[in-house]
Image (cartoon, rainbow, N blue to C red; front, side):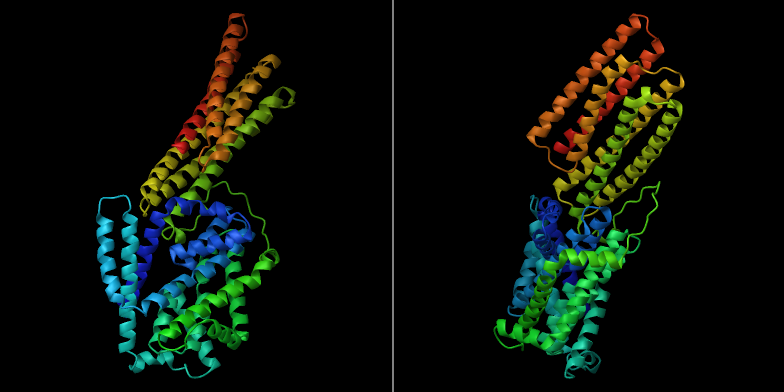
Length: 547
């Protein structure tokens, strides 16, 4: 029986990975869809859970996205609601196919055909994984059903159903059993399959099975709670959203338990016995979760305010050390979406470099009017050094994470994308080094009393602005496909920066020939060269992300 359960879980895992492999590129776009209205959030949560076959994994992923700032609390509520409905897909597959057909007549051929498709040299190997996972899932269900039926008369096994004829106490016992079972196997979908199998074999009644479904919906929240430990306030709030949503749902479902069963019986054909009981339980799960979502849906904003009231914002210290806000528990369940998460961090990394350069640009423009120049540039260099070290830490951590991503199952396109992202992080880190080097040049010019004259500054400021614009464009477009308009814009900026650099160097050489201070002009040329280098890095990165 345990072997059958493990085979069921293995089949679910292989099928989920195959679906993610085949839909990898589209999966990465789901996050953009999440950020739409609450309807989009619910639909996304439903689709995501149906694909990865685990509301726990989907919710953990949502908590990690909130922790990283990819989703707001309000947006996460809709996704979590959809995820709860999405988890009913497994119960329907099992109830409609698992008990009404001769499973082994489908399962074993599916495993064989799936394996052949998987080992063949063609680009759609993921289809083989989907078919093989499907076969293993139902083969595991077959063994689970057979062994439960054979053990039905064993006293040690029928103790599970000892409370089945005790009315409402049976329902409460079912809630406790479903809760514990889901915590142990970390999958409400697998719990649903076990409940359907037990009901089909007569070990538990329809009412007790419905109670176990309610208990499983509370037990599935444990992963979200665990993932929020050590996370920020928003992530803890997102985890509480899941816990309260399911707990409140179970409370009203218990209060209206008999009317809810009557509604299910009215809309489900047949009687809740034999094969019919599996359909009734699957319908009970769907009706309960859909109604719970409908009840909460109009009050998403109010619900978010309640969660914020329960978990108050705490003043957080600004850390000098980078901590990657990704929760490792979700790494293996959604490998394709991990890339999206890494892209967001890399975009933040580019944002830091952009802010470093913007600070330099502002100080340069105001330097001549600054009273205590030495103090200003020393303080500025200290801040730039701190940011440069922070970006160094980001590169080390993100590179290690991306390397780890290559050890998971990715489709070929995603593998190439990870490789490009590792090169992009290296380029961005070197850009931070250049920004710090520019700040040191500025400090050197002030310390040696070689401040650029007004006409030199007037020539330099437009050039500095061109590179600042390029950095801003790069920051905005990271993680996106470059449009034709953006491509033309980047090439124009690169050309303009190159022309401006040549013109500035030419003017500086003329000033040297005219007898101006050589060291000041050499500093000027060095500054122009370093600034152009930042533009070169921007062009390199845009070429990588567009390839």
